Amino acid sequence: MKETKKGIIAGFLAYILWGIIPMYWKLLPTVGALDILAYRVIWSFVFMLIYILVTKKTSDFLNECKQLWQDKKKLGTIILAAIFISVNWFTFIYTVNQGRVTEASLGYYMNPLVNVLLATLVLKEPLGSLGKIACGFAFIGVILLTIQTGTIPVSSLVMAFSFSIYGLIKKGLSLSSYTGLTIETLVILPAALIYLVGFSPAGFMTYQGSTNLLLMGAGVVTAIPLLLFAESAKRISYIILGFIQYVNPTMMLLLAIFVFNEPYTSEQFFAFSFIWVGIGLFTYATLHTWRKEIQFENHKLILDETKDKEK
Image (tube, rainbow, N blue to C red; front, side, top):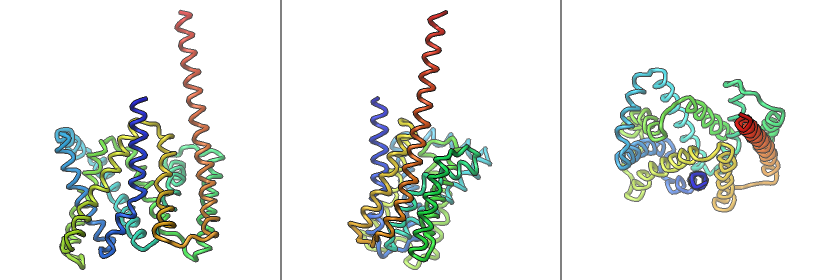
């Protein structure tokens, strides 16, 4: 129970930090989205190196790196993961700094449903009738938003699919969270440095002191939620984590409406409602499956105990 409590707290902290992170990027209005991404990669890598040294995980990290280097397929997979998470980060930063936090929240509301869709298409996992209806409601919501705005919510779709594909790739990697994040940022690091030094209109670290500090802090605000999430995932079931994950887009949506004063019409609310219904159906179906699994395990345990007594 103590470990479960720690996991729930860590999960809430991770998703709360992800929920308020738009406020951080809003503090950098003079820095382009691509520049922020490059600094985010660089300082995340530096922070992870410091974290590994301070927590005395150097030996384990080097061993995992050696195993990764020897397994070229695994190495190629983590390079692919690094590309997809970079696409996700850039799209999120760009969308937030364009004043479209509502659209960013939509992407993360859609994320669990996209996870289900990809699991069905790629992993060939069966999708129940409620799951199909849930995806159908989400699809209707996206269509309604497209009709209202006259444009497809590309940023939301890119964020949802890039993060889901990233998660799908990571599912097959047996790496510690700190090694995974360090290697992923290392993969993108050369491109980030080349861009900042050779192509960025602003150059490398040419901003005022406070802006430079905020850019350095981008590594911290990136790594800490990911590490908290990893610790949470170890201690609690994916079902519980699935409930907690809606803290993130809900906080973003509230920030968009009440802090950033983004327009939120009744038509948008109506379209979002379809997505929320889809999420509700998906959550109910997941919870129902989880309960059945627990009942089956309990029944199996009772049968085993009965057999032991008979012996």
